[in-house]
Length: 563
Image (cartoon, rainbow, N blue to C red; front, top):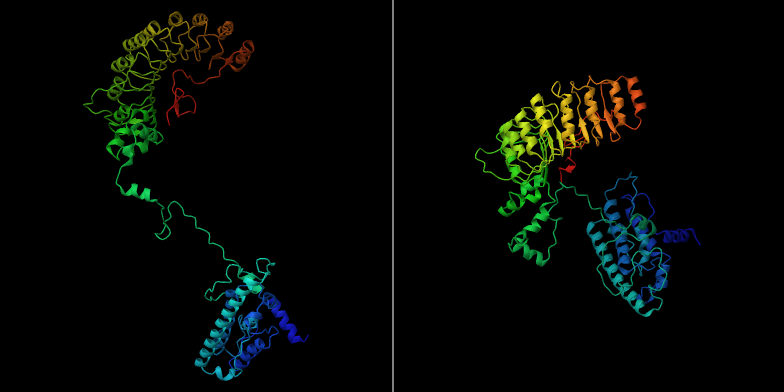
């Protein structure tokens, strides 16, 4: 086989263009004639009869299972390449070194079933643009006729030949199957070459990834669309308020999952929503600690029917209630006003509306006899925290102790009580009290008060007598009479000697003992050896009646204040 035939055979197998220098204007006719002659003298010359275009011949030509559209497209690509050479070479530079990727596309014309006969007088046709246009139009018409003939041949072959493409092994060069397209006469379209190199470069296009749209992204009208069925559109356009078809119970079941701020906004939607959003079942618990309440806001909160309310360290602006407020019955049962900034007038108005309180904290509050009288009207009060409260008198203490029969936990420490107030306390305190804190009663609480307390409340479980400087060892003898006492604090009671504490080991029920500031380290070690089963100095602060203990600030007395 000659070298020319070998090169032709190699190009047939590779089916890829060979780069070369662009033909200059001087040698334009020679270059174009050479390309056409190479096509004319190709080894793949077949008869122009459409019936001769069998699949065996097509496979030998390298076409394989390509359909008529792709073959015609390859031929059209070749024609376009020739036209590109003709049009661009006329203005190219003689010293141009650029390569023309599509200059040799004419070599792929072997995919056509007929040979193209173009006049060899290319020198004269390249002289004028009109002649070039005529030649191009001529060749296009011939290629379209050849493609039509090939389609008809392939259609007859698909219908008669048993060796159909669906039963044959697919050619590696095949990109499109002609099983369902051999009878269709689709219009020609300019598609890229089907050579191996072209197939590698021209990969199957992938769908562009959908861009991620953030919450603030704007979507154009052309890319945004809402699917609605006819029934949905009818509902929307009917003008019917379907919320009116829902019962109040269903609305309340929906509203209960909304935060309190959202409930306030829902109240502005309609009159019905306003009425439903004020339902007392939605305002069972509320935490407004460290907040500033606008005037008359506290009244609105209490009227909502809140059961558990935390206002610790809140700032309540005056007036907390409207001057002509009508009397109403509050549902408050657990109220925390520890360290709250509130006037005595507002506090009295608030407490006067509460008759179902079970646990109340007025730590560091300013009290008077009128407020204490309103507190005493809560017959079901179980826990009362008055730590560091001011304004307590013997009359108010006596009134509360006589009225609060169900009281079980009382913290009245550091309230600057008088001796008469302490006497009224230990004399009239409810026998049901099991936790008591009277710390800070300096020089006003004596041993006799402890004996009276033991007689009045024999069931005490916790007792805090810290900083009661007037107590003596006789108080320890009275304390040992408690049969159920589990916790005792006598810190900084300096008149009680260390030997008296050793006597407390005889109390079988006593579990914890706090004696901060009473013993040295050596004496403390000796005492721990004497009482190995008792926890000494385990609690720095008392938890009697306090709503919050430690770092827990989302609950009061063990009840959640937030939904």
